[in-house]
Length: 421
Image (cartoon, rainbow, N blue to C red):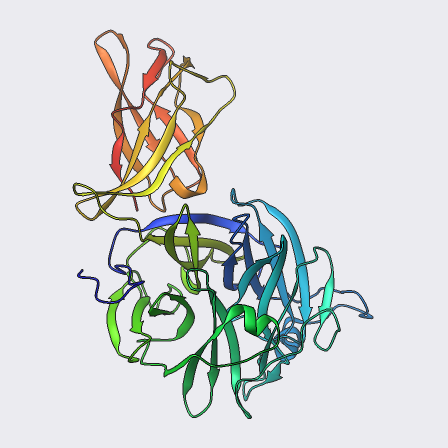
């Protein structure tokens, strides 16, 4: 792909991962997510599940009523994917998009609010606001704990927002004779000064709209539906890149990433900066039947050097009980070779492997949606000197080939290089 606009990432390029099939506070479908720019924590928003009794409620509320009222749940996850907090928002909307800001060391969330039900009795926001994330609390629309709501135009519907951390611009999407996008200076908007910088109309996203993000001069959109009998894999997920200057479509791509996920409904987009490198993220809600989980994929803006692009730099593997490092501790990374995402491992393990065994746990960023396999050297016994290592979808790295009469005592992973999907 020839980059024609600053901020344009190859949406047909090699794909990495941020989170892999992580459960959330509620079991409903994730709607969108954001990445905390300082801590790297991930915040995921979903419609609150039915049957909960929250603060101030006299009894359980059904899912249909939660949807109609626009009640949301926000889950905070660590970079490793562990739940570290949650918050409920009542009367806010559907959670189509959100953003995370770190202001003076305090995490603030930007979301839709002032929910109103549509013709299908589904609540969607008619304004946007921002507020401090306070784990374990319930925040109602109209509370003094959130900022004064802003509506970009009288009669606007489906009002949502996101942040471009590379330009510090707030992007607002809304319906008014078709869907529109406007950009604002983030600091001014936070201070209540709303001065639109640019406005473009939404082009055809090629399917059911599911999220958006902005990076430099490019707006990105996500569209598609869950995998099922009427939409078998490869499904109908599409990414679209739009020029902020003209509103014209720069590129549109059918997404084939993560083929092994169940359900695989596209949900949400965000941009993050890691060591100065921009990453474009898009999500999939997974598991069928639920409870749904959250998977977030990544497209890296890192440059390609001599035909190699690093998607995820070296990360340590967590050794299983009874397994020790042999000379160098095991680690892994994702790279792109000729446009193909490849999992590389290094280091070695020692132990007593008399049967197939788990030798390590993979971080989410290295966990595939389909198993990745390779042969690796092992101790030579009875002319058997190669074992089989497999990175699997449950985050486990397994070693195959050991038996009671031919025990594996060490294995080197440096030769492990396999296609990762």
